[in-house]
Amino acid sequence: MLREKFHWNFQPDEKFFDELWHEAYFIFDTNIFINLYKYGKTSTDDILEIFKKLKGRIWLPYQVGIEFTKNLRKTLYDEIESSKKIKKDVLTLANKLYAILV
Figure 1 (cartoon, helix red, strand yellow):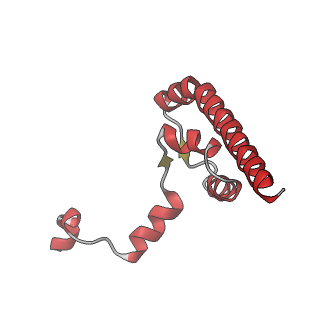
Figure 2: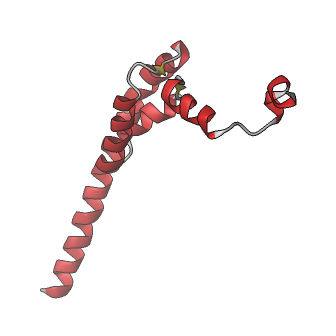
């Protein structure tokens, strides 16, 4: 009786967690969507698979939409610039290695 009356003071049982995982709505922060452009392919694919499994149970707050559209262009630009820098660094290293070996 105490458990029913003051349920918030007791550890939920396994049935509660099973129901929660199958019925709950999920609300994600903007960063989970922005970071999809920063993660490697495997991580991104894994997260997108999770989103597919949660289809119909993901709620996107208006503020998250605003932040995502506001920050997406800069995120893409930063990722492109990072890739350019990596390419430049690899070419520099390859040229140094070539100079040593030849």
